[in-house]
Image (cartoon, rainbow, N blue to C red; front, side):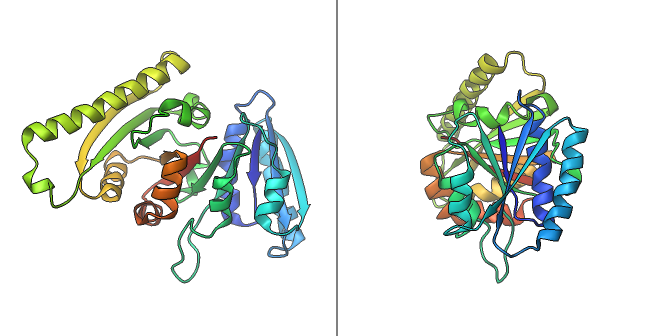
Length: 278
């Protein structure tokens, strides 16, 4: 089942397009939409938006299941209580810039949802609403975690049939002070490590999905500024979506306490999906 946390805003309407696309690929073709009645958006506005979403679901043959939840102790806890504990489900939410230069994730409901252990979660930063949640060119930066493909599989398989190209990349981060003194042999060794990981990831993906229905390439770069390199690749490749699949460790250390991820969310030229598996 696909679950959408919707706050009643037009921004979450943009995020909803991803959820509808995912639901259209599920066997049950159901979209459970959770809205907490916290008083920030009038019921009339929410009802209007949900009527539009219901029509979009109908056009994709998706069963639209809205739930208006009474406010509990907090929006986050209310959403958690309504979210089924199911490793096969996927919770979709949105994250966007807030006033006074606040960060995209730190201190947000999306941050708390990404931390819960009831089902996989993906938080989208939408900068191209015209895509309608249907990107064809995906950039997949990989950090070399041992989990590899299984951690990204639940989300990546939901994009598979719509993709034209998948760009796997790994930016091998080194200290800026070390970079000018990096020997050619050391650079080749680092790149070989990166390619070895990406090749293993692709093998796992092909074992799971069979012959890939999209073009797939791999890129390894030596980087002193990881965020800059990822943003550069997204711009050069004209990617429509960047997917950051994160482990428990990377979720803590590379999202919430690392300015690099916040920088990507702020400067990205394309949509970004921050994903966490169970």
